[in-house]
Amino acid sequence: MQKVWNRLEKEFTEWDIHHVGGGNFVIRKDFAAKNGSAVMVALTDTGAFAMRDKDNKKEFISVNEFNEHPEVYWEEGAYHLEVQIIRNDEKLSVTEEAEIFNKIELEEILAAVQKMENIIWDN
View 1 (cartoon, one colour):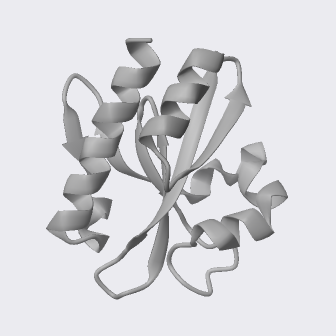
View 2 (view 1 turned 180 degrees about the vertical axis):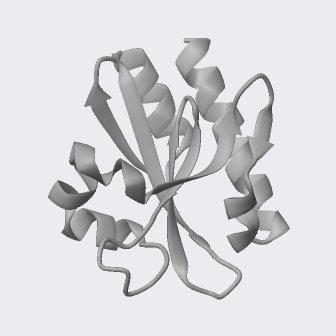
């Protein structure tokens, strides 16, 4: 577990890193959406997700907004707010919801998912 944490810290210096129990990790970072807003992207070893705003004041939240209300976004009932951006099925695939990002941001997110997957499964 510590080995994985150390590698994540080394490889994802600009990301918030969290161990969420059971050997599972989530890392978060803001990416610029096409409309210029900061959108939090959360990575796990199964893909990348964005989180919808709980109050519907805007479409997606930033890392700061997530951290301001973690009790809301961590509770089990909040899964309906998650939007899958990149799915890790047999091959990484981008969902329609990923159209909020430009190609450059999507490429960075895809590379991060691949890197995280390698760290988690090749440790």
